[in-house]
Image 1: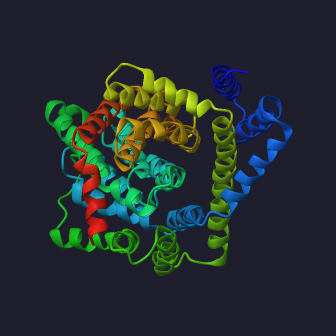
Image 2 (image 1 turned 180 degrees about the vertical axis):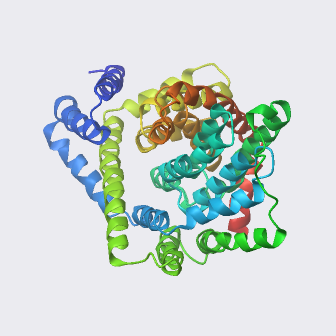
Image 3 (image 1 turned 90 degrees about the horizontal axis):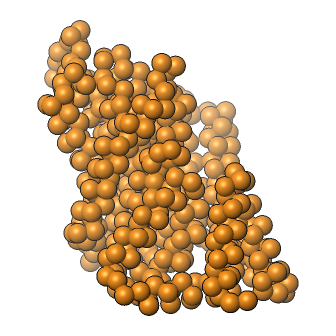
Amino acid sequence: MTPNTILLLMFGGLTLFMLTGLPIAFVLGGLSLLFTVTLWEPNAVVVLVLQIFDTMRSEALLAIPLFILMACILQRSGVIESLYRAMELWFGRLRGGLAIGTVVICVVMAAMTGVVGAAVTAMGILALPEMLRRGYEPKLALGTICASGTLGILIPPSVLTIVYAVTAQISIGQMLIAGIVPGLLLASLYVLYILVVGWLKPQWVPLDPHAQRVPLRDKLVALKALVAPAFLIVLILGSIFFGVATPTESAAVGVVGAMVPALLARKLDLAMLREAGTDALKATAMILWITIGAKAYVAIFTGLGGADTLLEFIRTLDVDRWLILAAMMLLLVFLGTVLDELGIILLTVPVFLPIVRALGFDELWFGVLFAVTIQMGYISPPFGYTLFYVKATLPKHIGMGAVYRGIVPFFVLQAAGLLICAAFPDLVTFLPRLMINR
């Protein structure tokens, strides 16, 4: 059987079974076994076993359950609620202030937890009702929550960034640090858009006539809600940037640090730790099952010659390398509407990276573009994952149509951020270079 036929069968089979709605981990694992036995030889099943063994003994992947556990503890510590109250005091009297405060909180949550679902759900519960009560345009409120919630994909400590770095076999620490500036760039674009909307369409972000002026002293006191998040961010990112700890070690320290605000709020007890541990175990098991299935699938795909065939096809194309890069980005946006982000990373990175190297692009820079593109897929209608996270928090009088319309401007802003990062690579590579020099 020719490599082209194998390539067609593997991608066609994967697409067909994904459309059935079966769990991606079992689709990948089942197809890996099927193609190994039928297209290769039964003895090659040992390759699947080795991939499972390699995944389960990976020290780099140990950071994932630790960061997830940290996020689960923070969700139950009351930190997020305190942050929202502080942002409401500071930005409540500014036109569009609650939406801007939501962006700021999502940035802080991304830097604390790196979990997208937590930010979107929390803001859907806390910020959305308050913005709607004050007369905010639902499209703007929903778009802000959906887009800002995805910043956890880019801003460290991002679980997805760790998975990408492990899959691409590049430095986890450098990859984490590389996401800081692009993440803040996207957040700044969101804030700028909200301010422009407030200027052009003040009826979309009306001021609350009953809002009272808050004394500066009360605002400063409210900033104590930022102490715990700032402590955690410095603890985690600072230890990685200055080389004090590896990402895995900083994740372990982060778990202990997350217990401090929970202890001060008197919410740290055995029942809370049991619930957080159970949630972290479920999320980690899902990630590892997908990782095992994807690594096995890619190993068989490579072993049967599919990767070499695809790379040779790209090399023979007589087009500019930037067009090839753009095609890869568009494919990632499409995949983001039908696949979860872990599946996208584990399936495409081993195939794309040889192409990226052959085209002469920087792998770290490409990794950030990859993350931004996954963010775009996350809010792309009709099946972007973030849209369904926020759906659970919608009041009865607002349908998914408002969500779809609301995310369009933010999708454009993310595309603008992607183009800026592509045009100015130093925005991505500056901090990692500084980290190496230190």
